[in-house]
Image (cartoon, rainbow, N blue to C red; front, side, top):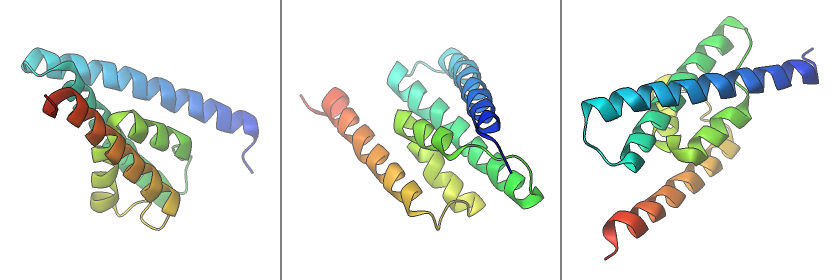
Length: 122
């Protein structure tokens, strides 16, 4: 049975991996494009979120250590909602958990509102 120390360690590890991945992918995307920072952020957080959904699904199949749900939720809320939706579709993962649907829906609405305020509204 996992201990709270194991959970804390997994959260810290996946948080660190996520941050490093977002920064690394973000630098590559910014170097290859002339996109505005917000679009780079959405794309990179979505890529990382999608990859973690796939990794977590694989870990579940193998019965190994999983990505803490809080990491997937935080990434979605920070902008990785597109990767979360895509990860659910491609990997058929977390589709029965209503809390994932709720968090992804809230995140989608939040970021669509930000897009409206920053880029569409005149």
